[in-house]
Amino acid sequence: MKKILALFFALVLMMSVTGCGNTNKETDENREELTKITFVLDWTPNTNHTGLYVAQEKGYFADAGLSVEIVQPPEGGAEVLVASGKAQFGVSFQDSLAPALVGDNALPVSAVAALIQHNTSGIISRKGEGMETPKGMEGKKYATWEGPIELETIRKVVEADGGDYSKVELIPSTVTDEVSALKTKSVDAIWIFYGWAGVKTELAGIDTDYFAFADIDPVLDYYTPVVISSNTFLEENPETAKAFLAALAKGYEDAIADPEKAADILCKAAPELDKELVLASQKYLSAQYKAEVERWGYIDPARWNAFYNWLNEKGLSDPKLPENVGFTNDYLPE
Image 1 (cartoon, one colour):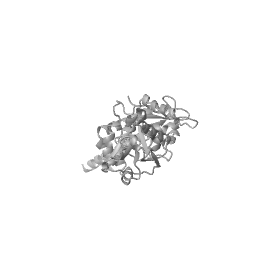
Image 2 (image 1 turned 180 degrees about the horizontal axis):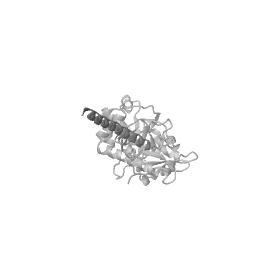
Image 3 (image 1 turned 90 degrees about the vertical axis):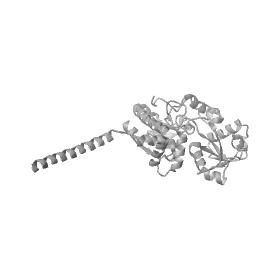
Image 4 (image 1 turned 90 degrees about the horizontal axis):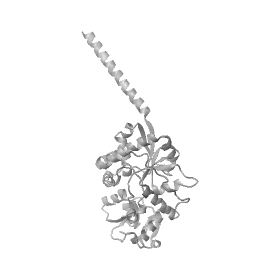
């Protein structure tokens, strides 16, 4: 009986080991079958990117047959890396994307999804110093990075408010922390994205005035940031592109539905981030990822074209940007 039992348990053990071996082999094979995708960020991880990390953490990419690697951007930005095929997707902005779309050195890239539905950027200043509207920037120090589109935007909003743009004091920006810059009064007015820097000033207890560019003129309600891909990749791998964006959309839908859990996932992926800031920013952006549209990622052709037409009118694109250049909704989930 002991010999029979010993033989029985030996057979069970052998079957268990064999079973585990088969499971591991199948896992390895499944992993090998995943299509590798490289996604390049525009900056260090932040709440603009939360849906990406949620989709990664919850296995949405793996479920779609994808293995996604998230990488930091090179010095020149994501556009060149994506255009060259070294990354399949990346983060860009409609304004900074414009020069890459036309001319002899045009890059074959397109925006395929809007990470945030509206332009949440604008000018922040210390409360009570008269800059609650653009005209108040007259005689004040504005920290500029001297970009042609940036400066024309400031001109547009100041003049639309009846102000004199020539009276705005432009100083080269050295701002790395908006809270410190406002506290020390090294500058008076700073261009920010409210979902991060604006929320940060709130948490720091600084009383501020703020106006959003999109509220001054609808033409400035352009798409920033966006997901881009190369035209070649999209043409050659349409189903992979659709699978990636469907999984990414699920990540952002989850971030909208449960910003606290989404904030935890982002902090897990990037533990160097301030948890309080991430959570507050996440709650703000949960209402911005889709806003009023039904489909996350949708790009309104009228809004896209209106901004580029304005750049054409102001001579900020040479050659001019044609209608419907640089974007597509064709790969978004229905």
